[in-house]
Image 1 (cartoon, helix red, strand yellow):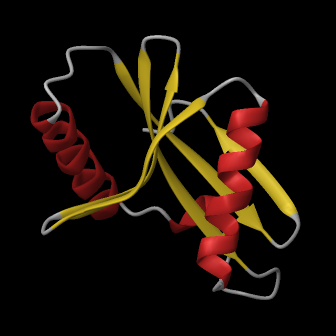
Image 2 (cartoon, helix red, strand yellow; image 1 turned 45 degrees about the vertical axis):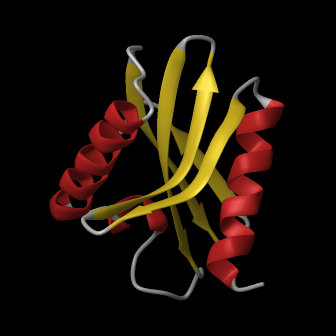
Amino acid sequence: MNPGQLAEDRAMKHLCAHGLRLEARNVRYPFGEIDLVMREGRVYVFVEVKFRTPKGFGDAVQALSAAQQQRLRRAATHYLQCHRIDAPCRFDMVAITGDKLEWIKDAF
């Protein structure tokens, strides 16, 4: 398993331990990818997981560009439409830098 997959596993376990439920993982469309689709009650939570090594270029929190945010929004909209879901949603980020995990609700 590569470091990105390990980071996604760690993020998923962390979110599940805090009451969220996994709906889907690694949802891919030609125009974007969703790392994790979770639910917190009625709210669909689209999660971007970023991983950086401690000696990498900056920490993981800084790794989400405006273009990536736009692609994730588009993919989430498509996911909701394809599954005929009419529910509130939000975009969270789990940033992992080395051993440090940071969960940012409503990241954008």
